[in-house]
Image (cartoon, helix red, strand yellow):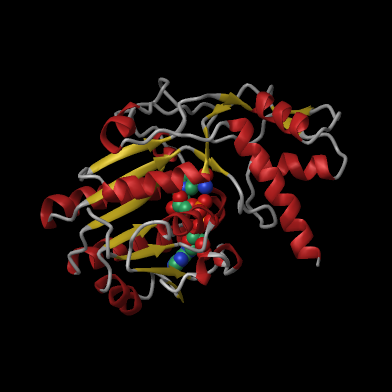
Length: 321
Ligand SMILES: NC(=O)c1ccc[n+]([C@@H]2O[C@H](COP(=O)([O-])OP(=O)(O)OC[C@H]3O[C@@H](n4cnc5c(N)ncnc54)[C@H](O)[C@@H]3O)[C@@H](O)[C@H]2O)c1
C-alpha cells in the first residue's frame, strides 16, 4: 500500500521494536501515527523523540479493550501489530499469554477486518520454527515449536490465514530472528543474553556461558526489523510470512567474545551446565524477504553491538541523573 497521507496505528509501539518503527515511520509521508500501548513493558521514554513530531500520538490502553481498539483501528489505513508477552512471560504466565497474544491478536485481526484496513503487518517470530530441523530455515520449515510463546505466534498466523480466506484481510506476517539494539530491556525480569553478558562485564564478573557455547542464532538489529515492517506495509505482498534475519549465524561463544572485545574487557567467560535453552540453532533463509519485500539486513553484528553498548552507557547516565 501507499503510505502517503495514510493514518497508521502501531500497536505495541512504545516497546523495543515498535518505538524504532515509529521513529522510521516519521521519515515517511504519513498523515498520523497513533501508538496503542498499555506500557506493561514499553515506555514513554522510548517515544520521547518521536513524540516531538506533531503527527505522533500515544494512547495508553490494551488490545483487550475492544471498544478502544475498534475506535482506533477504524481510524487507521494501516495497522502494525507488535503487542505481545515475551517468551519467559509466556512460560510463567501461560493464561496471560493466551489473553494477550492469542485473544488480543484475534481482537486486532477482527477489528482490522471490520474496519477494512488496507494492510495489517503482524509481528510473528522465528519461535514458530522451534529448534531448526534444517538450516538456513526457509519459510517452509516445519512448526517445530514446543513453547507456549511459539504456540501463541502460530495461533496468530493461523487466524490471519483464516481471515484472509474468509474476509479478504490483506496482511503480512514477519518472523523475526533474535532482535537486538538500543532500547532493549535490561532492567526487567526477562532480559536477553546480550544484556546479561553486558551486566556481568559491567560488574567486573565473568560472563556466563551455559553449555559449551555452540548454540547459534541469527541476531538482527532492531533498525533492520523496523525497516522490514515498513517494506512489508508498502509491498504488494499479502497472505505471506517472511523471515526477518541476517542469514548470518553467531554462536554464543562468538557473541560473548565480541562483547568482551568491544567493551575492552579482559574477563574470561565462565562455563556452566546447560539449563533451559528452548532453541539451540536458528538461522534465517533470507531469500524470500529479499525477493518479495526488497529487504536485506544492513547492520552488521559488530556495528550493531556497538550501538547497544553506546546506548546502554548513555541510558545509565540518563537514569542516574
Ligand atoms: N525482540 C525479539 O527478539 C523478538 C523476536 C521475535 C518476535 N518478536 C515479536 O516482536 C514484537 C515486538 O517485540 P519487542 O521486542 O518490541 O517487545 P516489547 O515487549 O518491547 O514490545 C511489546 C509492546 O507491547 C505492549 N503490550 C503488551 N501487552 C499489551 C496489551 N495487552 N495491549 C497493548 N499493548 C501491549 C508492551 O507494553 C510493549 O510496549 C512482539 O510481538 C514479539 O513477540 C520479538
